[in-house]
Length: 299
Image 1 (spheres, rainbow, N blue to C red):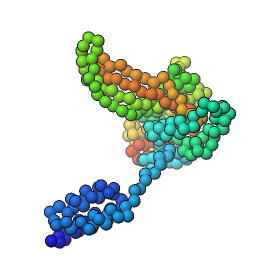
Image 2 (tube, helix red, strand yellow):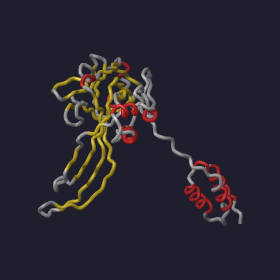
Image 3 (cartoon, helix red, strand yellow):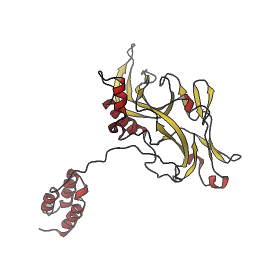
Image 4 (cartoon, rainbow, N blue to C red):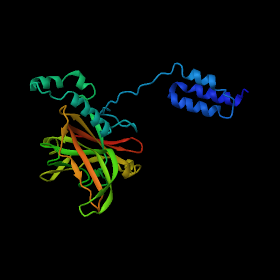
């Protein structure tokens, strides 16, 4: 028997069928027809006809533009994980071949295929998650505290200052492990990547960084804002993004980091260190609640 309630449900499903995967469409139609006599049978058949798979757009890095006073709350800065993943994939496609001269390799690095996603002329922004800002009423500015963000000149990335911008866990697992004395524990095993800016020293010295130690660069940033305006912003909501341009189209690999599990600390970690040569161009302080830019500091 025809059930008008079921028919109305079928019409509602049919209205959205062009944007739902086939499996989900079938599931919803079965649910709409439950309790009736199959009023959706013909509708289901039509929903399978003319269905097209909509391909997800290819990932592309977000480019930053100077001069804006307002940031969108999404897509204004790059997540390091997909940025480094895409960069590494393109680099591996075009790495130096065994029988390729250096001159041929350097020439190939400049071709349009490699520059299609990552351009030396573009500015790229990344969030700095660990910068601690506090308002200085005497100077009318938000200022970073000592050692809130540090770049290191050490073995992390040879011949570069390494400025951290994040890490990601690519896989995790658990297993039962024993030590040499037979004591057992459940070990949490993770592996992933740590992401860095590979920066030349001259890009840091005399700029927004101070060097309390020969191998350490502390960020000292001052973002100006009048007191009356600053009162309307919660200090914890003021965040920083760093803006930089590509210095070279190559991926640098560091020594990585590992942790061996023990009974007292049953954790096994393996993180690959990846870095991209960048030149820091400046920093942007913004209100993370509204996207309003507090100040832009170019270096």
